[in-house]
Image (cartoon, rainbow, N blue to C red; front, top):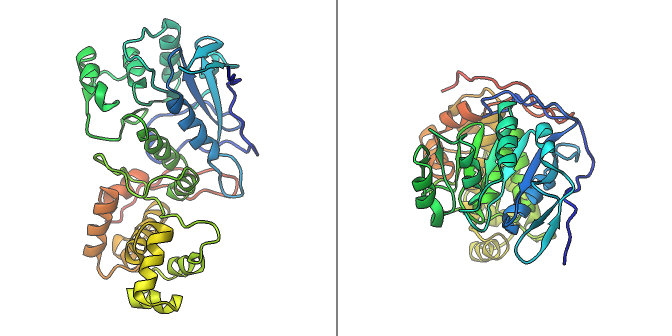
Length: 363
C-alpha cells in the first residue's frame, strides 16, 4: 500500500512575494517566508486532482531559480483513502490558518458528507484573506461552506446539474474550463485543473513565469472548452531540437515583418521542408508559431509597461493596431485593453517580489 507523508517538497525556498498582485481583489494577511498553498484532502479524494496542484505549484520558479510556492497537503484526518491507495497526511486543518491559497481537490462521490471541521477551517481561512479554489467536484465542498452563494462557479460537466440543484444560490456555468470570482475560483474536471492552477500562477507572478511552468507541465498548445483563459502557451520544441536556434532568432526578430520565406531563408531550408520540421518538432506551422510568439510578447508588454496599444502592436510586429487587436482577441479571448486593466503590474524584481499593481491610462 503506497503511503504519502503529505508534505510536497519544495527546493530553494526564497522570500515571500508581494501579494498586491494583479487580479487579486482582497488582502492576503499571511506574509510567511513563501506563498503557502494548502491542498486539502478528505476520504475519496481523486488522485489526479490532488497531484495536479502539487505538481504545478511545485514547479514554479522565479527569476534566479527560487521556488514560488511551498505546497502542503493537509488532511481532515491523518490517513485518507484515495481509491486504489491510502495517503498518510502529515499536516492537519490547522495549517489552513497559515495558507495564502487553499485548494480543494475533487472527490469521487460528489454527494459525500463534508466534515464540519473542514467547512469551518475553510470559512475561517477565507475570512482571514486566503484565496480558495476548487478542482472538479471539489466545488461541492466549497459550495457547502456557503462562500459561493451569489457567485458564478463551475465543476465537472457531469456534475453541473447536480451542483445547481443542490445549491440554487450559485450561478453554475457548465461551458468554461474555470471561473475566477476573485477570492474564490472553481475549475471543471480533469485537465481543467491545470488551466486553473496556471491561471493562479499567472495572477501571482505574470505570464512569463506561468508559461515556463506550463512547458514543464507539458500543457497542450490550445485548450478547448469555452475560454482559453488568458495563458498563451509556447509550442514546445524538444531539448536539442534542430529548430532551437531558429526559434530564438524568431523571438529576437518579432518587430520585423517576417514572412515564411524569410524564416526558411534563415534556416537554409525550403519552405516545404521548414513547414514539415515545424510540424514534427512543435506541432504547429512556422507562421502560427510566430503569431503566438508575438501575442505572448504583447502580453508581457501590456503587463509590465505603459506603452500604448499602438506602440505594442508595432513592437511585436503587427502591421496595424487593428490586426493586433483581432489576433489578440482570438488567441487570448479578451481585448488588449481589458487584459491590461486586469493584469497590469510592476515587473518582478530580483528578489521575486512584484510591485503594487498600476492602473494604465493607455487605450
